[in-house]
Amino acid sequence: MELASTTAYKKGIPNLRITYTPHPITDRPADVCRKFLEGNSPHSGKPLVDEIIEAITRPLSTEDKKTGFIMREARPRFLPPDTADNLQQLFIDSNFTDGGPVILPTEKKVKEMLEATSHDPDEVVGTMRPSPPHEAWEYTVEMVAVNAVMAGAKPEYFPVILAMASTGTSSLFSSTSSFARMAMVNGPVAKEIGMNSGIGALGPFNQANTTIGRAWTFISKNLGGSGKPGETYLGSQGNALSHNNLCFAEAEDAMPKGWIPFHVQKGFKPNDSVVSIFSGWSLNNIAWYSDLTYQEVIKNWLSHFFSYGIRQATLFIDPVTAEYLYNQGYDSKEKLASWIAANSTTPAWLYWQRRAKQKEMGEQGVEPYASYLKLGEGAEIPESRYLRQTPGQRSKDPASAPTAGRPFSKDILEAENSIEIVVVGGGTNTYFSGGDFSHLSSANVDKWR
Amino acid sequence: MRRHVALSLLAVLLLTIQISVSQTAETQDPKITVMNPRGIQPPIRLIPMPERSSLEGKTVYIVDTKYANTKPFVNELHKILQERYPKTNWVLRDKRGMYMTDDPDLWAEIKEKAVAMVMPIGH
Image (cartoon, rainbow over all chains, first blue to last red; front, side, top):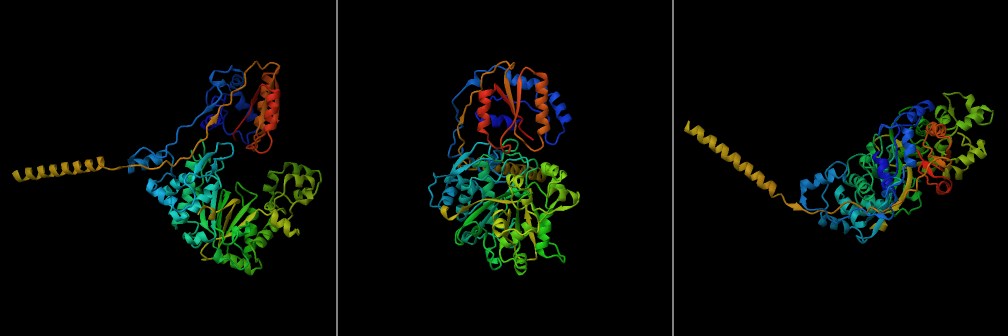
């Protein structure tokens, strides 16, 4: 209810007429929906259909007819003076933090942070919103510095944090599905500021990894208007990965010959310092000792991996596993990603879930769906989820589906492949982890020095 | 006995001093000034609602935002409104794209042809 009324307010219709149905309405059969509609609003207790009719016929009030602007409360540069303890509690109570105490952003500390960039404190860095329907907030270099101080970041981390803020991406994307976001740093800056790309890189063991990730949370909440549960954050269960937003550096020095750093894959120069932003939900952590090759293990895992995001993946390959894969003939990340995409399959139950039309075509004898149906419910359909094919392409030519094992051109495999590969870890064993993360954007850190 | 009373008085005195010191420390805890961590919220442009009228003989759009597997609800909403208010023309339309995608063409069409819109939003 709070979400509906605050969204209407921010959209400029503070008196929008709203009624509420029982929740949720997803996956409810028609008879249940009918009962919901014939019943009462769980909010007002009044008949739901009557409320809808009343909402669209009740004459307008003077308030409803108002035009002009609602001006927001003034934003003072400083907060009223108080003791450190009281300010810590104020910050927590105001949802300025992640629930924990912070380094209080005194003017002195913020000034020290600002000395790490050549940019003017009043320069606008960007805008950010919790998700597309929400309003966007604007923020300056100084405002980012305030949040960087709060997170415990050292001034030398500040250009990375500014670059991250410049992407306008909230780490707390508002969706009931509880997104997670990830920030990976490449280039010379990672070493300069002592980021961890080795043992425990994804864990709580390094000041730069921890505080840069934490700063992103504060920026998202305080500068991007995100992270108020029930209003600007709707993740039903939340996401444990949001605590530091998977912030780490890629292990560039530990890559096999021919494997290039992620930022170079995305068009940056090797000496550019870059922060890359990813979006997803979940991770698996795997070591599998068997007579299968590691590329087979990864391919089989991706064929059966199931989460909210089913059409993209990011693999986190430990340097030891990367070396193994190189020795198997994968002399580039792209070659490995292409092989996996071309050879992975999709479980039949998952395949048919979102393809009612294709199922119907298969039942009418249209290939390849007719053959797929004959494989049965427990089969693996020889189509990869990791080669993008638009619905338009598929409806024009169903046979163009990316069938496993079929030879594809290198161009198609690289252009339509939704698998990203990064190298990280300490080389303690043949591990890899991975999940449903996709690359959103990359920002140059050097611009913010 | 006298020694016992003296010790008790000393204990009370020490306790009082301790409380007094801690209270002083609390009241003397310095106040500091910190910077505001919040960004700049945009002003909100008010959108006046259209005038209301009787629904008889008028058109009202029901817009489906197409959140996954909510079609049965939208269809039932359409049916029940048609059944109860048959003199109103209830038009059921899908919004373009995913549920977050804007559809200015549809909004323009509704402004031109309808007196109101009912849009189920949520999951």
